[in-house]
Image 1 (cartoon, rainbow over the protein chains, first blue to last red):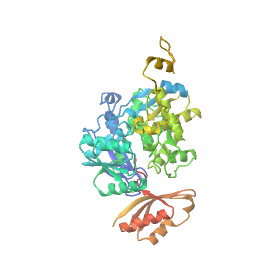
Image 2: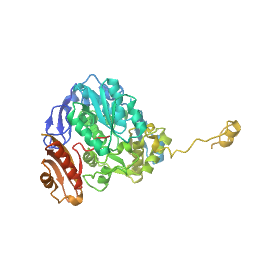
Image 3: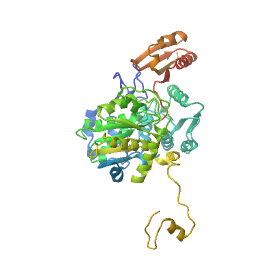
Length: 416
Length: 79
């Protein structure tokens, strides 16, 4: 397979071999994977993809791995749900939810990027995999490492909630609680990645890891019958997911799977951590770092590595960005659950909240084929909605009490 | 000799100050700017600091004391 050509600096264009490096030694710009699209075009086809595995690996020609031993065999191919109820509520004729709340094995889109990262790490000869994370990423790395039989280190801040720590410990990685704040964890992990011969998925393996997000674009297009959406709404943390969905759509065109890309890329953040959306709304091509303060913790990255590139991709696509309050995040979670039966984590509430805003202000129009990306499961952030969902109706254990409470006659019917 | 790659962001009111020059004089570190964007309203640099580890740590603390935001070259890696 090996369709990767090189790693290339996103700033100065200098090329490097496809090893575990992530920063250009010339200008310190970030590296990303460059492919031989002409070579891929010769062998890829819609039929080949459709005959492939029911996972992200059906798109292996466009992923940064040599193959054929793929780890994380069940990631991807999550449902693209035609959201008729939510669409009707918002006033959209053709709304879809890309539902990564049911991604395997750990119920977030991170399983896509980690499957690619751990496969590439193994190909590069690493025996230890690591990450710095407060949630979804740690869960996914720990689970994939357990299944692959690799040593695993997960670095977390010392004040992380118990439930999130448990989600990692169950897979028995080395969970390292660092005494210090977020910045201390951040700096230490960067230093460890430079000192030890480990595959740090979101540091020295990042060029490969980030490419896994493209599969959300590939699957969307395939599941729409090889059509591109008119509009997409994507939650932003580092901004990487948004830039890779944009890249993925274009790659499908480069290799002849689709004719054109006319998708507008829209980014969503929570007000309490919205450096990228704030810059966009101010008409700036640079962002200012912030100290995060939001319930959408999986999006709480104050100095996002791909913020600049997310602004660029959104502008190129003639898309937009917006942000919502924490109350709107909770309302967004409830709205999605109560219209489509999908329980999303707080990032999903951000996406739905911003979608709703963009429909109201005319950014997204009634007839636009729209896809909203829901990237994680609500069971992981139950604390965010615990005070907003009411209590069960409590009754005595008798038929009379039940029928009285729900105002039912002998023939049923009625409601509470 | 140890070297550390950092991304530094200057607050708007510090953009005109020769902070990198000052750091090179106040601490025993060699400062090497690889990429930068400095305008009226913002300023950042990707910077290499070379010197003893303790001097690098002191230089980073010195930058922070002057109000500069200092992050690893990868920016925020905790996801």
